[in-house]
Image (cartoon, rainbow, N blue to C red; front, side, top):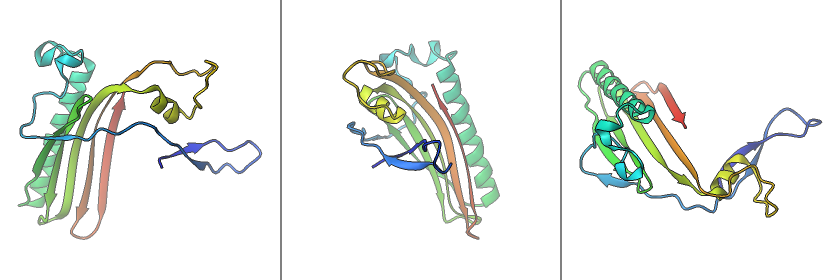
Length: 176
């Protein structure tokens, strides 16, 4: 079960306790893709295509993290001196997708991964309530909207394991 932090009672210790949260929402499976798309934003999802939506914050952020992925991968390959990244592209049926890159058995890096995800869609109210830690109330007192909640999340992450077993990682995530 997913765990979320719950606030302890004021008289108790300041150490947060973990509480199990059940989500009655199925997680969509990603679909492998043959080619890297120009953008993961689709016109059918309310985006006007790559050209006309290029000024949107979402499109600009996607371009930025994909450029950073290219730059970070180039720097890691240069530092490694021989290893090359292999790329997998995937899409999410509900909206969006990602690019996963992995370098293995290099001169410096045992394994390095640099991944970009751009996902969006509609979150069912039950999942939103579970994420916010609110009980589903039948009396309408919940602060959560009754209908589906749109979401957008995009980010880049990296983990590099050196041949000397040092771990280096970074991540950046934007949620709208």
